[in-house]
Length: 68
Image 1: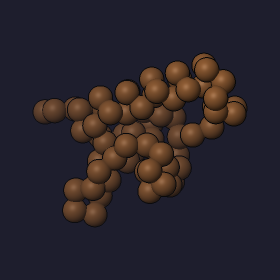
Image 2 (image 1 turned 135 degrees about the vertical axis):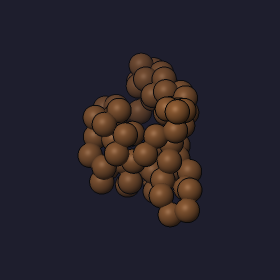
Image 3 (image 1 turned 60 degrees about the vertical axis):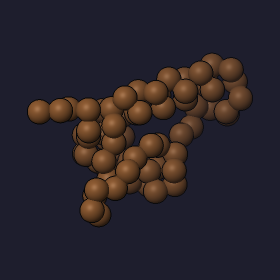
């Protein structure tokens, strides 16, 4: 089974946020996701890349207090 694709529940657990926050951030375009039917899905590699980018932005001090 390919574990590269994650559900909202899995990405929320992976990021240690609530499912509601994961839905909100996805709907706002702040985290990368795509819909299959009516359900959000996430590629683990894209989430990891997004995390790296967020870390780099925060390290450079160009985004406030590390908010998403």
